[in-house]
Length: 121
Length: 105
Image 1: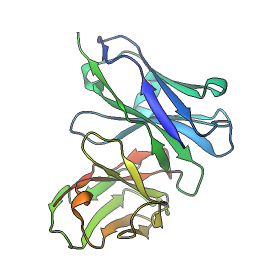
Image 2: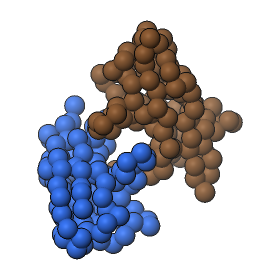
Image 3: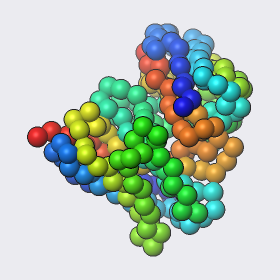
Image 4: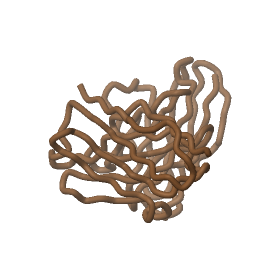
């Protein structure tokens, strides 16, 4: 059974750095063709892709946010960590992590429940 | 960047209706297109991958078609549990999501 779960602060202040951890089970990120990504959703708005990391250590970032994001993985702990610097109230959103499967269109086939992060002073 | 435009942004239909949602890409993305269903307060759920392949466990009333720039998600016979927001997502260049289509019963 594949599960993913996000953890991290629920409230951060403007200009602070956000660190979110995705802890997963039921698969290994060292398996060829596997990736774990982060997607966010501001309240009442659409999904927005942030970053993804792959079994071969390849990292990809959303171009508009690239300068603020870092994604890393700890294979032994089954964790993927996302850091986002210089947080702003517009970054208030539910943050999801999801597994990316290596097939034609590389879908996100399993998702975590999401964690709401509020940016406010 | 590849932009995905979904239409309509919302629709209302009756149980049993055939419903079609359109996703248009700003440039050709071959069949690198996925569809997700999201219910309020829940994470998205993968319905269709590679434009037309049904994800395991998804009811057969859902189907996808298209290639290049124009794609459709069809619900052949709308059910009450299909009330949700549907998103398309491309993975041809980077990743991006459409703006969503809210389906009300």
